[in-house]
Length: 97
Image (tube, rainbow, N blue to C red; front, side):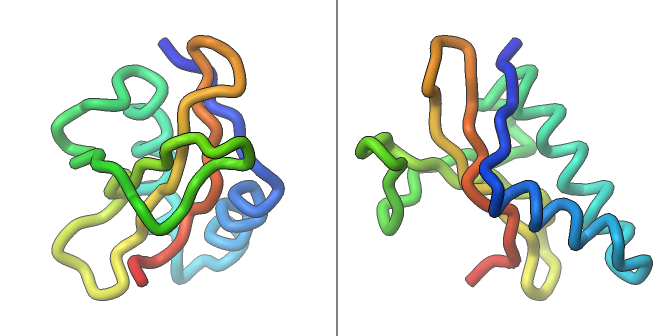
């Protein structure tokens, strides 16, 4: 199991989804994705892959995980391993660019 850490931006993203009742489905999808991410970052439903346009604050390799699929502007979770062992830091929870 990994401990999930949220940056301020990621926490704001998640709270924005939670506050907007019309985005309840997306909020639930994001929470489910975070749960899978904590259990196994390589879980098949996450479709985790490197995201080369970003890097972590210390040059960490950033990954993208799918919170939604086959949906217009589907939500994605951008994350990296660390800062400590068995930790994952979520940078952002946003619609696919």
